[in-house]
Image 1 (cartoon, helix red, strand yellow):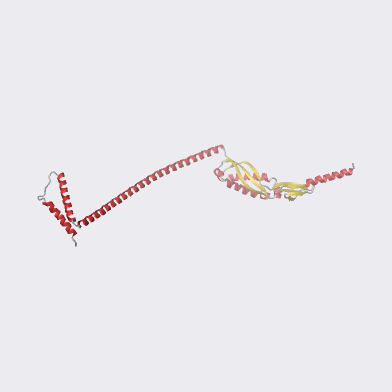
Image 2 (cartoon, rainbow, N blue to C red):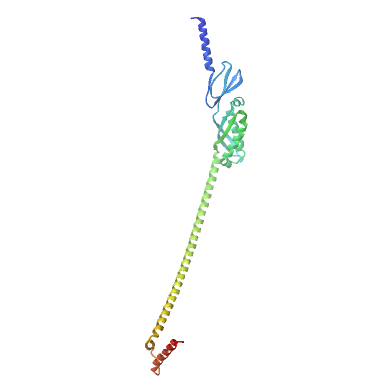
Amino acid sequence: MDIGLIISLGLAAAVVIAVIKSAVVVPQRSNFIIERLGKYSRTLDSGFHILIPFIDKLAYRHTLKEEVIDVDRQECVTKDNIQVGVNGVLYLQVIDAQKASYGIQDYRYAAAQLAQTTMRSVIGQIDLDKTFEERAKINEEVVQVVDEAASPWGIKVLRYEISDISLPDSIKDALEQQMRAERERRAAIARSEGERQAMINVSEGQRQEMVNVSEGDKMRQINEAEGRAREIELIAVATAEGLRKIASAINEPGGQEAVSLRVAEQYVKEFGNLAKENNTMIIPAELAGIGGAVAGLTQILKQANAPR
């Protein structure tokens, strides 16, 4: 085989290999940093790109997606001198690929370390009880400090979350005793409130019962009084009606003689009853006294009915 042909084929193969290696495909949501002869040249966005062989170099690859970094456990001392272990999770995103490449050696490690130191500083300013109550506030302070420091690196810190806070066994026992005492105190208060409310309900029921009884007595007395008044009224009306009928009957022919006869009968009847009840009785000297009494009553009736 001709040596020239072999050399030509070799050169062609080398050119093809160089072209293939110089072709770069950047994935979606990614940035590649290109250096030309050791110096920053450009930033490649997503798509297909051709580099100059032996001159351009793919130096850094960065994803623009949100990254999650596990912040290792660190020992923190609270304001009241209690040592606690804190684990956290840091969420960040590359905003400027050039700054992320040349602004710092390893932005992930730097952000995690800065989050640890900031967490120790924040925990040292609050008491133990508030570390559990103010997690959101602690997270915000860590994000603010780390984001401000990472801005020159082309990094945006989105949020920080405390994943766990561990306490020494002695502190756990003390907190459990405190919580148990608090629960017992609340239970005692709840029982006393229940008993007080029960007593109030009983007394309220008794008072309402007394009110109802008194109201019932009042209504009964009112009804009885109204009944008696109605009875008296009806008796008076009936008596008046009877008297009117008697007066009307007296004015009729023979009415006066009937009245005289009725008076005499009643006189004799009552005189007989008196004789039954008493062993000793006084008899009028003149039996005509009965007729005189009747005549006198008749005369009174005539005068009452005489026209005026």
